[in-house]
Image 1 (tube, rainbow, N blue to C red):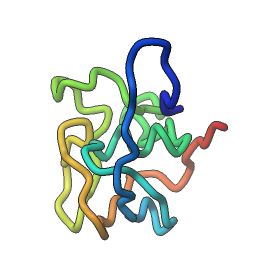
Image 2 (cartoon, one colour):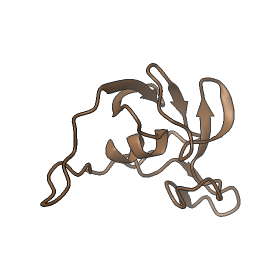
Image 3 (tube, rainbow, N blue to C red):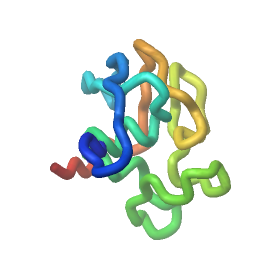
Length: 102
């Protein structure tokens, strides 16, 4: 889900960053947020709502909602849409049922 070709803009290749999500090794790129790297890897389901058990995922992308909050390197409630990806990060959702598209 990453734009690689555009008629006007050019995109430089960025260095890869390796991280884990629920124990699975994934790859993101320098400058990605955690949420954008997960989205790029086809992961859309991050957690479930408490009352209705409905799936939650990447929603506002500006840190206002809590849909993307996860545990990052042992710290809970990290807003992954606002947190830059770092080599070796361990990201854990509150559900084992993640939806992977693509």
